Image (tube, rainbow, N blue to C red; front, side):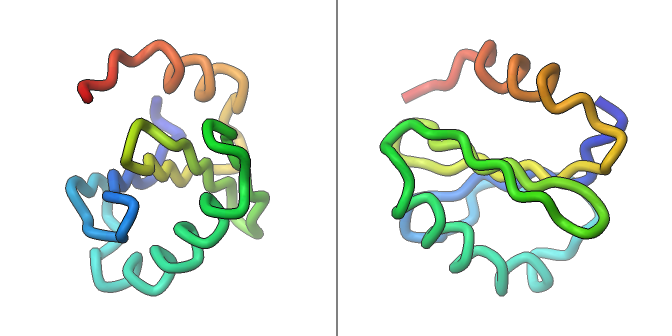
Amino acid sequence: MDEVETVHFLEKDGFLIYAYGDEAVEDASGNITRWQTLIETAEEKATITLVMEHGYVILQPVGNRILVVKCTRSTNLGALRTTIRQVHWPS
């Protein structure tokens, strides 16, 4: 999807497994703690969508990990959520 700006795949403890996009890992590291806190307060498999000034951030628990997708305001959120759910995530 062209509207996706960055993707981060994290361990529950915040260790970065994978990063995609132009945002530097150093810039994202300040947000990682906030993302972890939000995931911990939600239901176990709940998808969290944050509405930001310039777009959206989707937090999706995947097993013992967290998928974080940052996208633009023009993103079709339904299509993005469907795509995330359809991916076969290895354990």
